[in-house]
Amino acid sequence: MNLFQKYDPDEYSPLILAYIGDAVFDLYFRMKVISSEKFQTRFAHKKVVSIVNGKRQASFLKKMLPLLTEQELDIVRRARNKKITSHPKGVAMADYRHATSLEALLGYYFLLKDEENLKRLFQMMETILVQDET
Image (spheres, rainbow, N blue to C red):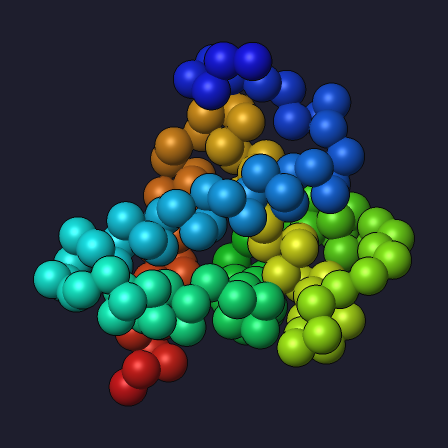
């Protein structure tokens, strides 16, 4: 596998897309935090954990839904409706499904190497973060 090549995301299940998208989401916000503020590692970690969690991801997706394309909504629906047998204790199942759906969408665009749409989605999330902090 070559990390830098383009892949067909339709060849992967929504849960695999979410698995990849989770890593993309985490890395994006880690880089955002360390590049925007001069934190010590433990403080940077606390800031990232406040963003990178199922409840926050679910909140992002719910606020982003009206802005998504039909294709994106289809990816989200497929991931949300996928049978999930377990979830973390601290996250309600509904929130976990929404978080998984957002991660699947990010994984989809990452495999396509669609930087434009990844940037658009992350910009939406950053706008939501700013709105939530005010």
